[in-house]
Length: 255
Image 1 (cartoon, helix red, strand yellow):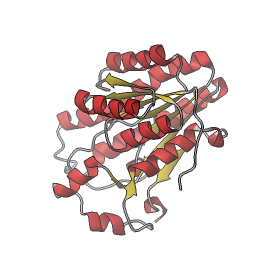
Image 2: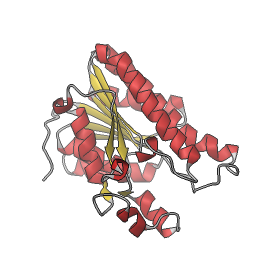
Image 3: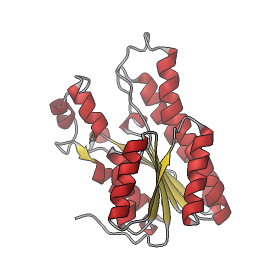
């Protein structure tokens, strides 16, 4: 059974919100009573996600946004505040994983693309969320790193660089904004059963059986389990928690 939270009267913002961990977290925020701005590059998918939430009686706003464009992410955050009056919580989730590549063969184009989405996108989202939270003197931000922010992996140098970078952003901003009433943490998902991971399995990039066997809890994680970690980090239950990188990985990094 999942814990329950009361976020009535609060406002959340989620990037990469149309599927996987982002959608699960947006749903969880809404079910806990928060109004939610859902930002995603896929207009059709994010509109469908918002319709699902509003049809269920929740307050939600669809925001078409490419996180590599700072003006778009600033606009998405501002529109959420304009629609709902404030910003209390954010989950910066949007990210990609490129195909495994020999470090000596990785193209600059692929390196730049993964950096722009996974690292610069989170930097831009956090920056503009903090503008509002700084004025309020309160807020909680969770940035999506990965077990790839805690370990290395052959063929994934550029991806892991971005996820290590997210943890550095998180820790430094947490130290800066803790005295201003804003908590900032990172969540580090392991191998989670999402559409992105399903596509990797289907494409031969990931062996599901090996992935399941590589962690103490002998299965893949679920998007809902990441959502619950995010909600806890945003809740008063984590009121003395800031600057951490929380592994939610079935024990992978305990080895």
